Length: 380
Ligand SMILES: Cc1cc2nc3c(=O)[nH]c(=O)nc-3n(C[C@H](O)[C@H](O)[C@H](O)COP(=O)(O)OP(=O)(O)OC[C@H]3O[C@@H](n4cnc5c(N)ncnc54)[C@H](O)[C@@H]3O)c2cc1C
Image (cartoon, rainbow, N blue to C red):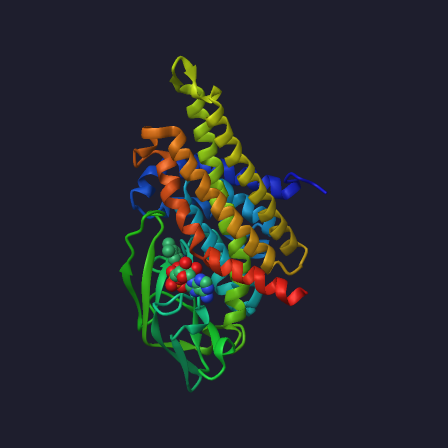
């Protein structure tokens, strides 16, 4: 058993760390101010990090989940807005690789991995379908060899900038989650419209929009996987995605841990550095323990995926622990650093805003707990 990254996983983590410093860091403040990081994504397109698990023939790095979570952690420590855009792009690419026809792979994967598309997006959530995703109402109806898509989606990361959007729609209203089918929709398709941009607390450089489909005609070749397979595709995407969100939250958590430790060494109070104060030491230790415990859980889930084993429960556990550890670390760091961290541009202030959503998107902490409990009930 190894407790450190090895081989290609370590190389990809090191690559992401370098890219974070060289490419993301110079734009991190401007991105946090609300500018979509297009230049970062184009640069990432030359590194393979937009398709970490995608095969080399399509421009990816052909690595696994462990490399993926390690890379997302490194990127998120510098710019979480870029990291989430990269994470969703990877997720969409993974689903096209896994469920797509050779034509669909050739059509989309080289553009996704090279940054020509800037991003991929994943459209499951709707006004009335967040945690209860199977309640979605967007529908696709057959019209000869085509499909006609009608409905709307909410909270879609990169929905306005993506070269391809993976859309889940009901194709059979009588079959519940088994009546959902996935489609690949390209920008410019008549009837595909971009709606409101969300003004968010954090991840302000990541674009989050509503989408609508009004008699949007798609050829059958836009269908990803079989009819009725859309919910399975979405849940498979989210298993991997949840490990990525874990890595993302911990990237921010470890960043604020480092910022706090630096601050405590530099700042004096009553003729002593704050780092010699036992209360501060205990708080740092608590942050480090929670972050490390969560990181081991993220690695376990990612590793299970790399062994081809089921990891839904472990990914759910890892996401809860990592998002809550990252959130705890950001709040603790804010208190340890004090007023300096209240400056909206301070890395701790940014992490506090950016990390919060980790406990909500790709399934809230409550929904993860339901996934965990149900899988425990099923295994006894
Ligand atoms: C910044 C951002 C980016 C996003 N990007 C995407 C994206 O790219 N694609 C996409 O499809 N979606 C995206 N989402 C949507 C996200 O996945 C949903 O917000 C999430 O699934 C939760 O849904 P909801 O916000 O509607 O909360 P709700 O489902 O309304 O839940 C509200 C509260 O009730 C609790 N709750 C709900 N049901 C239960 C239950 N059965 N038992 C116990 N508690 C429950 C929840 O845990 C939560 O605390 C994004 C959201 C945000 C904020």
